[in-house]
Image (cartoon, rainbow, N blue to C red; front, top):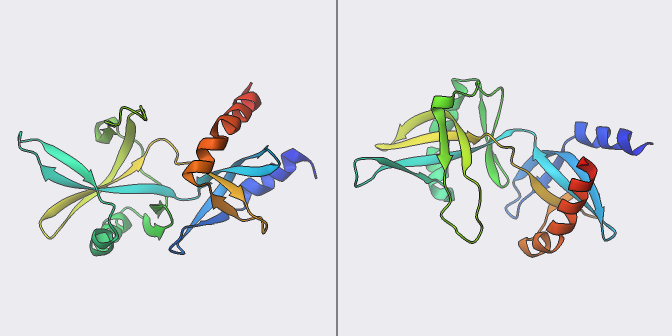
Length: 188
């Protein structure tokens, strides 16, 4: 089987990435790279990742958004968020590493984009742009659901059974320059 045909087959059939809690995230293999006799994969989730933010009144009469990350809060608001998204024919899912939605996302509306600026000077990350999907209230708290405009990608390694495993932060830092070099070489 040719390498091109092999890549097409791997991209069309999702693989499952699991977290420590046993949650699963279906992903397509965007790229497969061999570095130091290990097979690494660049994974793209099948469904669109989403983030939920709580809107808080700031002291300057402006609103500030805080990402909802703790499982207890997500458990409380999940049914309401699920119902609100269902009105748009989107199915909210509890998946590994991120909440996701299945279904066709609405067209991007430039007036509905949230830009997150990162204050971490060490990482020097680019601002992240998120598309607004829906908002709702739960126990007098306003929440909003957004999806990133840029794709969420994961670097993993294929284990002995051919299943992807997320790289540890240490391993990712070690192989990142080698992976990036190979990716850039393929693009040229």
